[in-house]
Amino acid sequence: AQSVAQPEDQVNVAEGNPLTVKCTYSVSGNPYLFWYVQYPNRGLQFLLKYITGDNLVKGSYGFEAEFNKSQTSFHLKKPSALVSDSALYFCAVRDLSGSARQLTFGSGTQLTVLP
Amino acid sequence: DGGITQSPKYLFRKEGQNVTLSCEQNLNHDAMYWYRQDPGQGLRLIYYSQIVNDFQKGDIAEGYSVSREKKESFPLTVTSAQKNPTAFYLCASSISLGGNTEAFFGQGTRLTVV
Image (cartoon, rainbow over all chains, first blue to last red; front, side):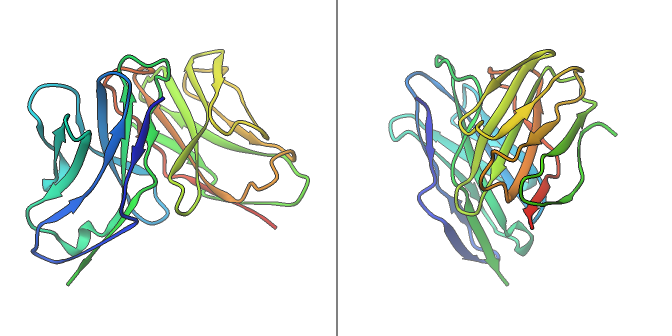
């Protein structure tokens, strides 16, 4: 079975400071990993994905994520946070070798960037 | 404009009523999905469809039904058997089921039982 954990329900950071939103995963084989962002009463927007290759993935709006196989983590990062980055962030995983070919989502992390 | 359109944005249901949520995509995607979102629980998969005239139950299919008669459309019916239907419902699509393809989401339908 595949699963995703986002250990922090809430992350607060000051504008201009670096931000990190944590994600760990569990799969039986190799993972495809995704980050999405959700603004209030809206659908999810795709930010970035890890498929293979370089462990540092760059995505939309200046976000990046680092894949760490030994720690089974895929943390989302941004060097300098903006107030407009305040939103709900979801990590998702798909196991390449598993029978469940759909995405499994974490419970979400609410990011608040303080001015 | 390519994308996924969900309607209505807000829906109110009386106890014992069936309601149908619409989802249409013009992305030419084969796979479509329905998720339910409750506060603090993330997204839970209700049903998914790999191709026209085929669909599979997800993790929380009880009290829901779907159809996939056209590639573009994947409506979700919330039946009276669903005991706690108040939630935010999200439809998504992807080029195919599985693989490295990301899913694209509609703007959601907020269903409230009154």
